[in-house]
Amino acid sequence: MLSTVLDIDGVTAVEILVKTGASAGSLAAAGSALALLALTRFDGATARSIRRTAVAAAAFAAATSVLRIPVRASFLMGGTFSGAFDPAIVGMVAESPLGTSLWVRLAGLALVCLAVVDRRQARIAAGCGALLVCASFAFRGHTLEEPRLVLGLLVTFHLLGLAFWVGVFAPLHRLAGSDTHAAGALAAEFSAWAVRVVPALAAAGVALFVILTADPLAALGTPYGQLLAVKLVLFTLLLGLAALNRYRLTPALQTRTLRAGANLRRSIRLEALVVLAILATTATLTTVAFPERPAEHGAAGETESSAAPALTSTSSPHRHG
Image 1 (cartoon, rainbow, N blue to C red):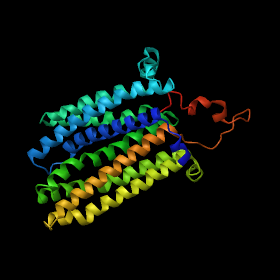
Image 2 (cartoon, one colour):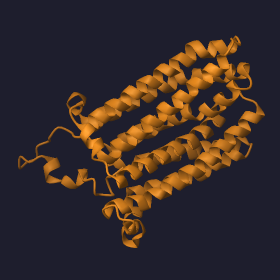
Image 3 (spheres, rainbow, N blue to C red):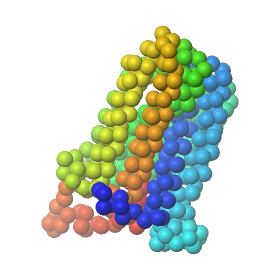
Image 4 (cartoon, one colour):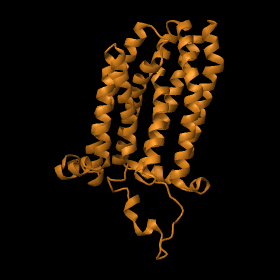
């Protein structure tokens, strides 16, 4: 794994950075829409803050997602600046699954921006936009392998759960600094959702790993499996912080314990950094490493991977995440 990461060149590093930014912005936008739709324990000022966050995150996500097209074109042309603006290469990338993913995401982000309207119908439309944003990740990368439908549904469900988690960061951080009792009420409401969402999110992640690798233990000997192990360690840390919030910090907020708000704000900032690290690891994982399944022998005795090397080629815009 270390050699794979150290071999990353400048263009690949830029691609990973842009992909991380697009993912973070997309999850923040989708999560804000989901928070407005599912949660109720916050005041009007906090609701307006969530709406602003949704629109700002959607704009950032749209910009970074569009930027992925020329960055990918540059990568395909050997990292040249001219490659990013070559009409033929840019057109090829735009017509690839990456382009399809982009259009689905932009449509979802446009719907998320309806969250700025303080009406239930607008919140529902924004929630549908959040679903599209999360589903857009299933239109490219490793989820194009079979069983495609199952992988797509798992990725979408996994990201919806993570987005909802991310969406509560900003309002909870805001309330913890101004009204600890209100912050405790919102944290308790989110915790009631989290006890169902978080285990399902983790189960979807494990199912994805098993399906993509077929042999998880053997996969740990590959760069893909090792990077995924790093992601799982980070996710375990995130679960630990969530447990701390639920069983220590939320009760402290509700009883207005001294410095409870400051402690929760610090924990939320740490959670946000861990999520960002998870997204960066995922971006690296889907850019420089690919799942390796056990060889499946065909009629002629050759493995499918050796007969169809294009499926794992990092130079193909159709399979690259």
